[in-house]
Length: 221
Image (cartoon, rainbow, N blue to C red):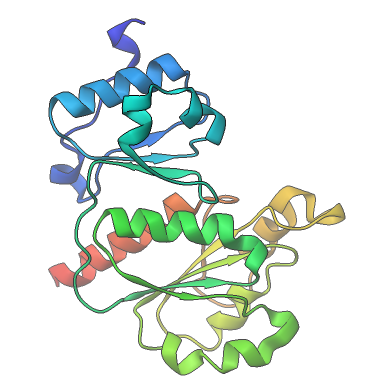
């Protein structure tokens, strides 16, 4: 493999406060092996996202043993994540248990960067009492990352109840006209609750990074 195919961004944290992450989807095993070798040579930890189990299994035993792999989120840690410090300021809210592939990607990304979070799961609008029962707990946080599929009404509902930053993540959960998360995406983009931010479908990693940028700004004030 040509070394020009891979150029790790080892100074990213110095520029923007977020560490290098490797999108594994579409990468060959040869490319992943090269990336891990470069990171190992300089003792640089990495977050790997969208790492399929088949890709992980095709790596050498040495590389497999070096990864902390979580199959639902399809994320892996290479090297040790930062130690989580302080009380959680980010709530990760899931409409249903079927959205776990996104919420786990969110929380794994946050944890890699040493950011604690609180999971508030299975509080979708089909049983609104479940959300109301945890609303006081939710209000103790600065940011809510809200994952929802189907009609994706949850971020809009929270927009009228929670005064912090709301980052919506439409998920591909659903069937028929849910259309792989497109309906959820359009619903969040057209939310009548003011100031609800929206990420791409299933983009838990991006939502976590957006939340960390918010905290960086808060801490800098």
